[in-house]
Image (cartoon, rainbow, N blue to C red; front, side, top):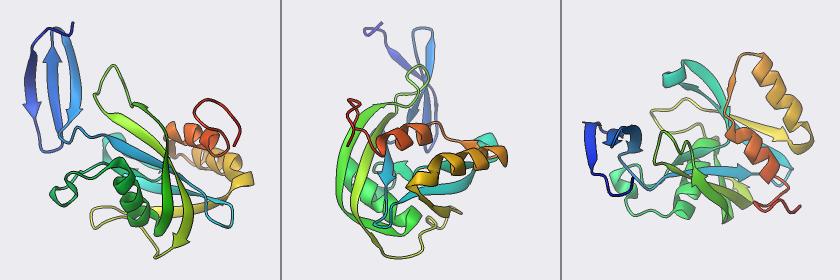
Length: 181
């Protein structure tokens, strides 16, 4: 299938719809991917964000995340730079170090997007966070030992829980090979 030509069905500002043979899929206009940031404060609180997502018409609970190089001013940005920028923008926390946990497809049958799970270390509170002008983000700082109950309560309250939250919870104390940290 790799030698088939790619047809562009639609090209928007943020998303392109492509066809290769009979397979249709989405491609971000910025093909650099996304970062998902697993971060724990010095007080052992996990940083999560809540926001309304238009495509699913629901509030979601997520780890801080964002697109790599998604604006002209961030062109050429690395996943590490993007993670620090998004962590600060969304949560108000900066960090000394960003380490890669793993990278992989967000939905291999539907999208070309690659997600980079990262661990932020050496956190420092800078401001209240809440996202940029186009976002309305609520920051949650949840004690590590209460994270499962917090997520369950949000689900019971009708929130859409991003499945990456469960992967992020695993990565709180494991590496990608399953070794305990």
